[in-house]
Length: 282
Image 1 (cartoon, rainbow, N blue to C red):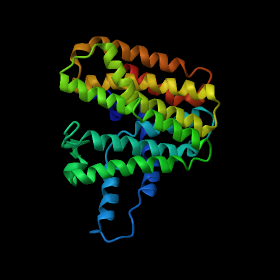
Image 2 (cartoon, one colour):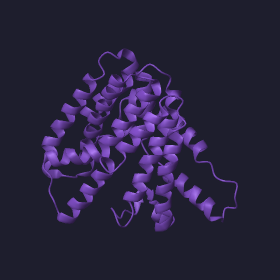
Image 3 (tube, rainbow, N blue to C red):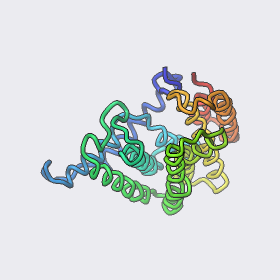
């Protein structure tokens, strides 16, 4: 059994994620519509490969957090749909590039061939590039706070955070480095926490929340993101030397994240239950 498999989660989590997936995938289907070109046209192939990368199996946790955070801040989830679609496309771009032979060299992702195996390496590079740029174009269509949202996601996904985490990971593999818990959480904060944090803050921005609330949501997202990655490591058997300490930290971080929702009442119920799930799933 997977620790963080939504199919084994409490009903409230499973139903919420299933609903969010339908909503987000409907939006992505529109954003990633195929061009009216012959199927053997190279541009059609690129668009088809983009859809393959994004619309396949996946938990859709990040876009679900965008929508739930928007609701937690008092606005309809629909206000944040462009941000939800944008962050899922950006996440997909990172996976496509991470799977390349120059990075992790993976041939399978989510139970099927990776993009560079399904198509080819050059196409996979272009798919990642296209998804990254399209994510920002989509984010710019937010009715409220578009400029702030673009600025935020650029920072979280850039060389100081997400890409810094990937660089650390690659260099540690080359050096055969065994990280201590501090190293591990630096990695997880960058590679995973950055987008979880961005997801929650984007939801707050789309809701028109004030700066203080945006920061609180970002902090919640960072904590649950790191806790999520500790749980994922447990599933995959990664960083076995830190299993016991990382397990305790997962619980601490999830509990701390839940406390950051105080004052939001029932509107934050989904985020509250999500933190509880990440902290105690087994």
